[in-house]
Image (cartoon, rainbow, N blue to C red):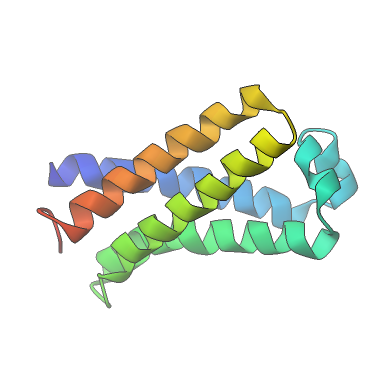
Length: 123
């Protein structure tokens, strides 16, 4: 199970860092072509969401890899789960029902990581 959790942590970290870096690197107008939800937020809010995603992704793996305060890994997983709840609610509010599924999948992955790392497979 430990290997399974590491695989989940790695996959979720890659997805979050890539998504967050995209939001940080591109202007909001360019993002709006692919992600209509950014129209509801300011440039600073979109950048903040991207930064939180990058930090969350890094938090899923770095504390455990380095052995420095490894309890931050499940805490990061809880934070990512909260971010994904917010993402799903944003899509629901905008009636973007097809866009909710990725948020729900990422929420489930984060919840499994949090459960495993806080519970029976803690560091």
